[in-house]
Image (cartoon, rainbow, N blue to C red; front, side, top):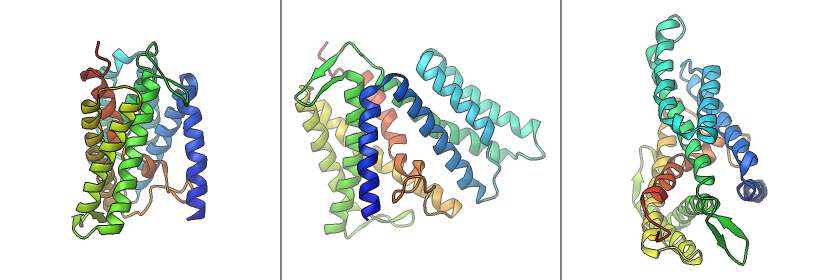
Length: 275
């Protein structure tokens, strides 16, 4: 537990620096996390004897990252093109790559790559809009990256403590035996309150921010369950051990893989600035 706490403090400090700095630092760490998560994904499915495209996947993710950072208009083309290339591998390399390997590669690249590209694009949104607070000044994108992470962390924290205290009814026992309906409800209520509170602090519309908090709690739970299904399928407990006491990058960002796209599209389609 001590190792977990120390690692958590170091991680939060590093995350604060990267998020606040933005620019090439944020983009670089986004790429690093994306590639590490992909490596863990490939290694996990190798436990089932599947030949996921490691090197081709690295190249594809780097292309997605570059498109999101420098040419966002190309991202809509890059994603389906990458899936098609993965499928073609089953034809061109049919001796070593099965159609199931190709499908798992294509799905995995979108599953891991697309959310990180959303995170990168979210950080760069509306740099001219700045929220000034007693703590610091935040551009619009920086503020909502924080809201996304804090909301996701709140979802996990409220679910854990509520479930531990009063959890009686299992949510998805065949997938994640420790999750309870009571924990999920605690997550929904707590995350909604936290995100609404952040909205109040930044002078954003409370109703819309409360809805965002509710959605973050739901999507964070779904993201966690999806990784649990994958890990049960391949027969592993943790995706890696690069983060002492916390497992791998995939373990730490499983919920973010769902909440990052949610927040990115929410702020685009919901008027939060009254303009």
